Length: 342
Image 1 (tube, helix red, strand yellow):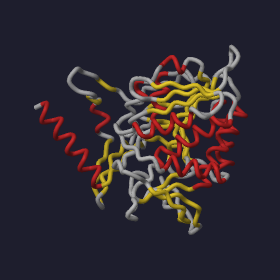
Image 2 (tube, one colour; image 1 turned 90 degrees about the vertical axis):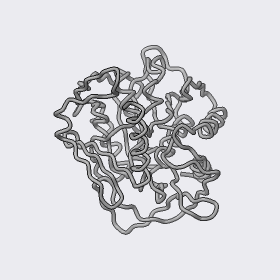
Image 3 (cartoon, helix red, strand yellow; image 1 turned 180 degrees about the vertical axis):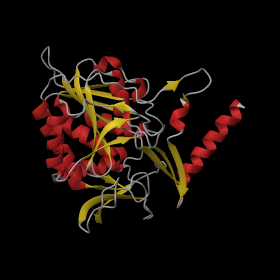
Image 4 (cartoon, helix red, strand yellow; image 1 turned 60 degrees about the vertical axis):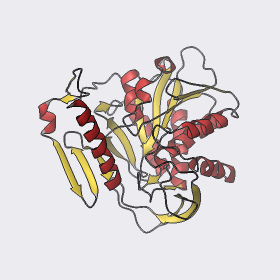
């Protein structure tokens, strides 16, 4: 990452953004897109950003890159981004040694640590850099992912018509691939798509890759709407959703380089996948969002320890962890909803 790219990255990380309060981030993104030659873009009614670079000949398909514009952190007047050398913490089953890496961390002006929002500002940065670098690609930047993929669930379907495959960078650490997301299978196991890109990502990140199931992110919604293969990768943020969150610069650069190499390998073809997205059996009614089949609850485990609330589905290994403040916020939200209903 050269000095200009590093400064651009720090500028983006310094933009405050919180779910439902993403206007500043979208304004920043569009100001950057205005200055990338060959890029056209538009916003929909939800404030999702859709960008396209270049015009492919008939019969060819765009690679699409995905990120979300919100973070979980409280909106601040300003985020001061500092360079520090930090050790990587244990992340989703992977332990690290004592090596310290050039990292970017967020602070308030009084020096108090604050979440830098690497989830998913890193994904935004990678997507924008790919727009600058590639001759042909599409980018979808969706609002309000952190409360259930609000933006991507209402994606403009016409934007997906000429997409050949979709890649999101919204996993922590340096070693994760999302195979299932919200119960949605993203690509064919041992298929051409994953077999081409898995060794590329592993080589770029310099480690073995762990294919996992994750609770949710936008790529699951895009997969439900498209006939093409999708995937989600690690991109170098750590201690996600906490004031200790930071981003490792080398991991971000490696993720970006892996995307370039994937496009070179995959080309501009359609990697069709219509896989069986039926992991969950849901019954819907007019009064409730979801009335789950009772057998699912037999596999749900909830635990509250050390000021952390964890919900895990043992069928898919999907889980979500909330800190104390997030748990209180969830409790108050559910209490309000139930009071309104009953």
